[in-house]
Length: 308
Image (cartoon, rainbow, N blue to C red; front, top):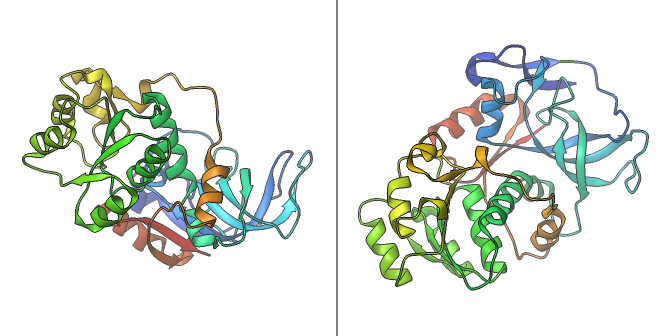
C-alpha cells in the first residue's frame, strides 16, 4: 500500500515521503480500514517535526474515515464493511491515516446522511474544541469570546458553546463571519480596535476567552477583554509560547478532565445538518505536499482532506 511517513524528525516538507509498504494487520482492540478520506492538520506537520516523539518510522494523518477491512481480537460492535470515522493509531503503527489502509484505535460509525469527507473533518476539531471548552466551563448563560473562530477548532467551538447555552462573541475574518453569525454568535473582526469592539458588544468584561487563532500575539488584548484576569483566558493556538509569561492558561499545562467522548454526539448532529466543520479542499493522496503548502500558508480556510 501507499503511505506518507517520515524516518527522521525535521521540517515536514523535508522528511515526509510517499512510500510503498506492506498492508498492516490489526492487533487486539484495533481495526483496519480501507481509507476513504484522511483529514490533515497542523498537528500532523508537528508530528514530523518531533512532537510526541516515539519509534520511527511513523506516519501522518490522525483523522480517518474508511470502510472496515479487518477486525482485531477483542473488538466488538463493528464488522467488515462498516463505514467508520475516528483516529488512526499513529503512536503504535509505522503508518497512519495518510495511506491506502490504516489501523484505527478509536472509531464511531458514520450515520446515513454524512459522507466520508464531511465526516473526517470532525474528530480533531470536535475533540480539541470540546476539551478546551470543558476546561473553561461549559456553563449556560456565561459570555465567552472565541478568538480565531475561522479556524476549524474555533468554528467547532462556537457551535458547541452555543449548543450549551453560552453567549458567544467570535472574532473572525470575512471568510466565515456570515456563517458564524447565522449560528447565533456575535462576530467582530480581528485587528486594531478589537478590544473596544468586544467590550462594546459584551457590555462588560467577558467571563471567559478561548484563543484558537493559529497566529499568536493577541493574548495581551484577550486578557484586557477578560477584565485583566489572565486565568479567564485559555489558548490552544499560536499564543501558547507566550501564555506562561502573561499568566494565561495554555493547552499543555492544564489538568485534563475525566474523559468524555463527545464525538458521537456531534457526528449525529452533522448527519442531521446541525453541525459542521468546513472543508477547504480535497486532494489525492499523492498530492500531500500541496496540502502541506496550503496549510503552512495560513490560507486553508477549512480542513484539507486527502482521498487515497
